[in-house]
Image 1 (cartoon, rainbow, N blue to C red):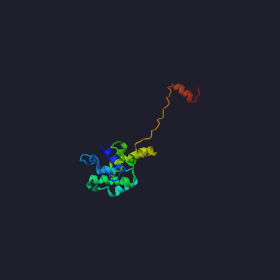
Image 2: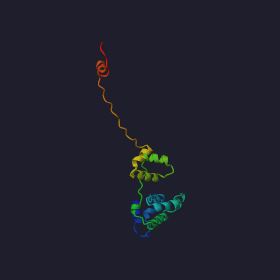
Image 3: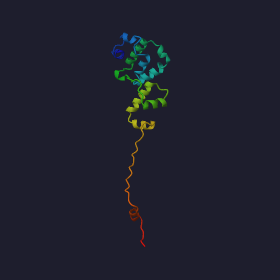
Image 4: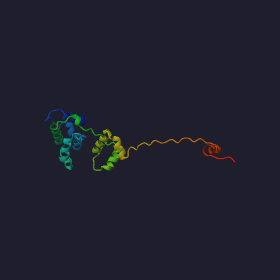
Length: 164
């Protein structure tokens, strides 16, 4: 319910609407970090947030101020609900684990986005092959069955000999 309330409040079209009380309660799951992660699809805003807000100081900002700031960003960059990033919780699979090993500095949400981008790309099979996830299938050649024949028939068919 808090996420739906936040989305409705953020995109209601009014610049000065007050923050709903449900978002300011201590048990609310909306945090400063989750607010930053939600707008990763919009490139220009993401660069701005990473430059000025992606550090430890983000946790010292009160949640109400952060919500108001994000709402102003929504108006400034003309964002819609389609620009929101609905990142899933950590879903572990082989691709995620390999990307985690190759890029240890990326955050889990960034890895989830990278994994989704790889799965949607047209070069998916090439990337999977390069990471060793898909091994090309080699067709097994079938051996022809050899008929068992007697030695005399084999010698008569394959060798020339003269009877004395």
